[in-house]
Image (cartoon, rainbow, N blue to C red; front, side):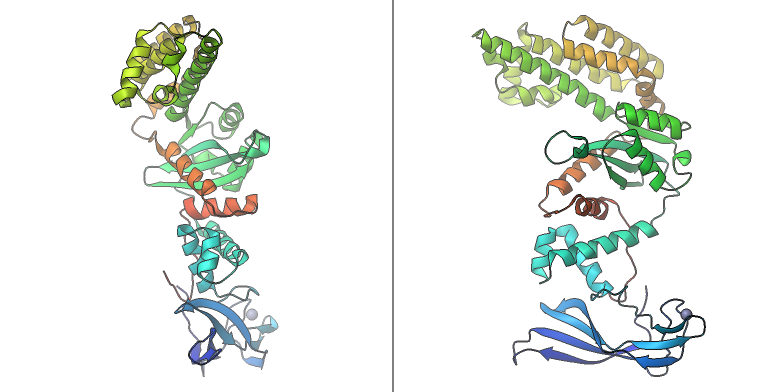
Length: 414
Ligand SMILES: [Zn+2]
């Protein structure tokens, strides 16, 4: 940690009416006998002159806005000529101390940005700039050498289904470290290539496992750039494709029955969520309705049984038996005369080798890692941080899910 070396506190002034200070000023002076350091090379240099005093916002004391007040020296550096001295509590020309930026950034993980600004009597802009600085430092400091497994996924964001409503995310999903590595707009080949490039030269070549959805652009980029890694199709995505297919069958059948004023339409009422859950998790009255539905000859019941029987797939220990089951399941699905289930079967068949890789990677990859990180992303994008721009949201994602190392600071609070 950088220390407050070479400077001393001279005095503290309370500004405003007596007994009700509106701000606090902490006057700082250079330490006698310790030379200032050149802001470019950080080597000690003899003094030249003093600039007028400047103020930097510090962490509020007793809820009162607090400022550092200091007249910076100009120095005569042997190498760089006349320069302003290095000031350890600030960065660049910003009128805020690093300690305060770190303080706001840490609070901005617990509160919304707006609440953070209100609580500490500053602006949304100031909170945004602080988090941005914190994230930039963290990204520059983080280590990516040990990343062996990644998950790549698409996240829907905002309203609508335009290309800009999707984000591509790259996670590290190693057992010891799960974090967001990269996020970018859209979900094309170019997006993923941009992401892998941003993670540094040789990053893709060092990977051992890659976990994705059956999204063609991703499959192509991974095959081209990380051919040495074992490419696994994520269990959670396959399950969600099956669930979507069951839901399509239910909706179509429900509309058909209602159009014919059939009594069987009642059986499908309020069944959306019980049908999407795992069979063993459906209890109580929903279970009774589900049993009644299964006893019927409705297409929805057959679709649900197909989906439910697929869960056996994950229990196999060997690739050969899992492959045999997959063939058998696809055969049944294709003969089911349920178009959405047939579509899933065709998709699974087309990606059979990648799906079976799940058994080759068994024990090394956690199937829930990508899903868990996706849920955390949703919490951040939906929480009312009051994002005004896409950029702000991106920064918030790195800040909350990137596990970034923290920048150095002369003082640390909270
Ligand atoms: Zn210098």
